[in-house]
Length: 256
Image 1 (cartoon, rainbow, N blue to C red):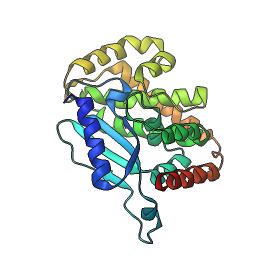
Image 2: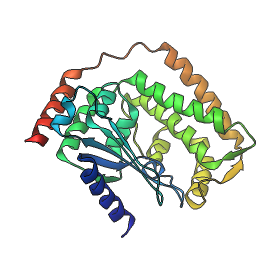
Image 3: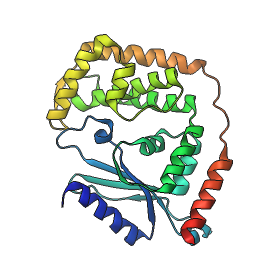
């Protein structure tokens, strides 16, 4: 079986074993972002629905399914109820799953969820998520003279996502190339293109000398974004009614 067939078969196996219905399964990592190395894992993430009775237990049923990585395949999923609670808080992980360009399993329920997602976008929460991601990766991985090549993308992509959010007031696209096209300063494009070529043709663990011009851009961007974040007011309150209605309808339809 090719990788697509293996992923499809594993999703069906999970449904059978766990007694769930998978509404959406996508690629969520570097492959979906467009900068996978030859040995990158397949990060398969999914949203699943349990039976009605499972949601009526007094003792909550676990709302996450996780499995050991095997043969480059990394599977994990969230219960629909958990995904909706996070979506209501403008969780960008759920937003990215819904916008992934690589889809392994789709459904009409997932289409409805995508339609609801735009109303859940909260600028300040989204900005904080990507800024924290960039800041943490920069602090942990890009301060030495020799750095992991892939960590530049785990810092630059969220920084460009922040720029997108501030300029367009919307969820940033998954593809790194789109963010580069619209949000990367032109003088840095050559340096980023060189790194991207290295990333696409070398193993995940490749180390490279620190790239001064990119580190300067990162530090400056972090400082500017933190200052901007401090000036923003509160996001609007979450509108739970539409998410509640969607959840109730989806569970009832699945149980009928």
